[in-house]
Image 1 (cartoon, one colour):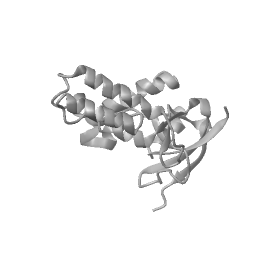
Image 2 (cartoon, helix red, strand yellow; image 1 turned 90 degrees about the vertical axis):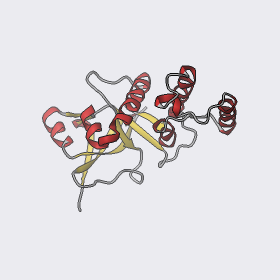
Image 3 (tube, helix red, strand yellow; image 1 turned 180 degrees about the horizontal axis):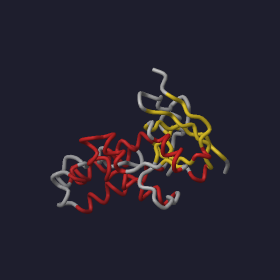
Image 4 (cartoon, one colour; image 1 turned 135 degrees about the vertical axis):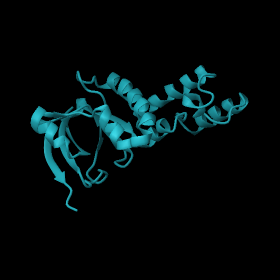
Length: 191
């Protein structure tokens, strides 16, 4: 494994972290600030991701949440007001790749199927049980009534790490931190 280049848009205050601490890490307050009223929805899902990603690439002591990255300059989030984009070179062994399209299933509390046949079988199974959807098992009205269904849905989410289509617009990467020595370039917002 060698080095890979990734791109990540971060709050401009991250520059201060790098300068003063030599490292930038995502803290809970950052997610709360970014997502405001819906941060209570995102934080438990990010914690789930952290637990599963930690099994793939152990997180350093003191890291709370991962840093979302693009795998291509073409697919990167461009800098906006009060942000910068870091271009980082990092050992590939420190990168957690996942399918961003599948992440939408997690965000929506949906069953993530292996394939179309698996999805059809799952739909038939919940219909047979008299249920109309799968997202209600996580925190909806059925959350406490169907623990096995909840587990089945959440267990399916690990497929987010299975990448069948290596596409620069679908595949994303996570890293645990940005260290000063990793930064190859910083792209500033130009208005």
